[in-house]
Length: 223
Image (cartoon, rainbow, N blue to C red; front, side, top):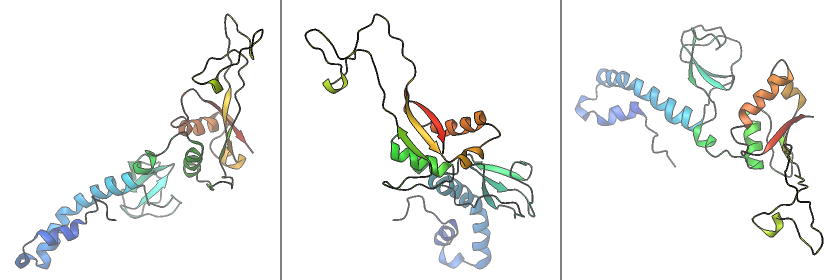
């Protein structure tokens, strides 16, 4: 089904010109005037909304207006014969900070399967539907609380008998963070993220923190 915003301004120009005025020169003139509208529409409603279709950057020569994905962002060449990396903003223009379309990103959350999909897409690894295991996969760790608990339901609460309870009651509780989630990532992928483990972990957390539920502590393990 066509998108509401799927507009081809070249065709629109011809449709709006009276038939007796549709000469080649006149149509070409008005299409050139409408060209910036098509450019902006494509950036917003195709690349930003639906996701970039530009290829990953590889060293080579690019023409003016060529687009590439570099460090998860989308860049456009400003000159012909461009043979420098997109980190040079005198030759490239950043047009989109995230190559994943907003239509997709708004569906991401901290659910196991969805977060696994998001992580694998972001780090360019392979996502597989269960029971197969993705390259980056999540492990849910049991949380053991050794204090008396009163929860919303009976299953979440401690039990009480005539002379004992399932857990102890204290005046002051001291909790250490419990790692409820582990992000498992291939060691080669992890090592490629930075020069040291602190930088690599920061890269993973910079993405995962957007979606892991607040209050859930997690760690990152390589395999």
